[in-house]
Length: 307
Ligand code: SF4
Image 1: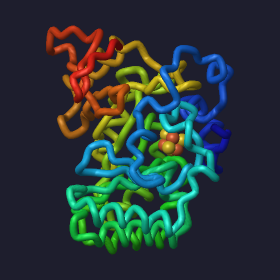
Image 2 (image 1 turned 60 degrees about the vertical axis):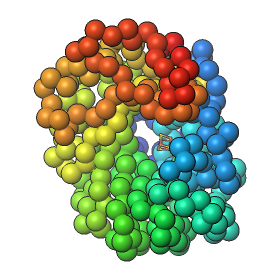
Image 3 (image 1 turned 135 degrees about the vertical axis):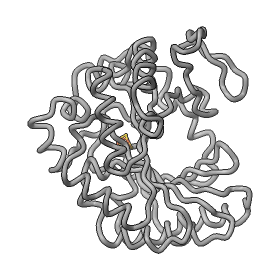
């Protein structure tokens, strides 16, 4: 994965160590050892049309671009992200997605992600969002992004207008890792999305040395709720090559989440999940309220995995 940051992230990196650690290339990235494989979520196997992944039947993931405003060194899709040529999507690609959806009425939800969809040109963003959401069978649209954190200026008027024109629920999932990412520009960006009728939620990843402590996550989730972003998921960092040094001890993650569940309002507390290594889905981790054996879990297909 290439190195890239935005001006917004560069400015934050100067004063915020937690941001610097996410975007700076460390030597640990090159040494990082026991990774399972480059595609732990088995997305390539479920690609039904170039750029469209159907793992669940009722919802599809559309990778609109391989580009992001800034590249997070722990990215699960680092096999693909920043490979601009491989990930280049244009209107004919979007047309092939629409063709697939027309023949698969069981798909009710499209998740537009990437890379970051807000990095594509306004015309393509508008086209993809407008055409897919206007299909009768599509009832829900989701957009996955980190742009409000990595470069809020990408959430511009044309893209906001495109969101506002969709007459179905548009959920925007924003990737946050640390309270220092909630700047004035990010808050304003979230407000603009809410004004465009988007419903906001967050996704986070446990990252060693960045957010693996109670107070950081307590502040993050409380502040997100206060700016209108509902904390949704916090994941265990996937074991992708180059990112395993970010992984936190699972017992520590579970303890932090147990303490958070005791203190946070229910709305502020995200679900703590592991993305099953066969790509079958997100498995909730039991907290310390239950006397459970957390050394292994069974995925949606019934296969067992050791943590
Ligand atoms: S914004 Fe998301 S897709 Fe892009 S590098 Fe970061 S984690 Fe990966």
